[in-house]
Length: 207
Image 1 (cartoon, rainbow, N blue to C red):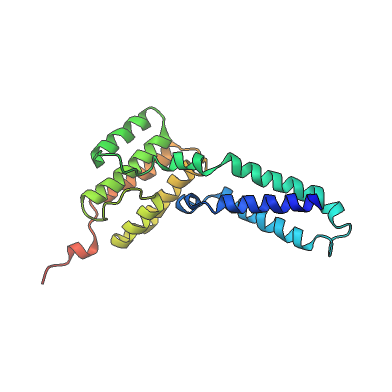
Image 2 (cartoon, rainbow, N blue to C red):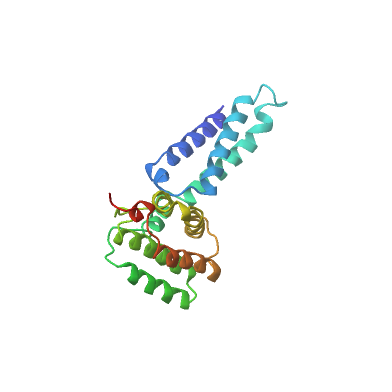
């Protein structure tokens, strides 16, 4: 009976941890989807144990205990504090750099082979350039996905490129994808293309 209680407590603690508001603010990740899948699977097994599985808890008990420990271990390893430190460096409110400044930083990082930082600074350049030209409204704390969504509303012809760059950024900074020169080139090309892009509404003659 004590084993059942510990498994239920493990599932409850895991759900409470994932209910922290910062998880809603962060970009979606494969790890978080795996959390939810594991928890759902754990609850289903707990519900069915002793009824449809031969041997009941004598068979499922050790397995469920291991699964619960694995889920909790993953959560503790990727706690919000760890992720929030990474997220705080995306489009922060404490920077006064211009789009040109971010581009210069991006080129310096790329020249040194620091492609994650280069991609981040080039995305910041895209964000700041669009704000400077009033294509989007200045807003601190904007994520890459939000940038793609807001810019796509003004420049729908660039929607695919914007979401492609946002996906690359998210994979590099949240999904542990290896950043490459080719990936940086994709964001740089988008930045160059957007610098001359004008929202369709701005090109219509005033009556």
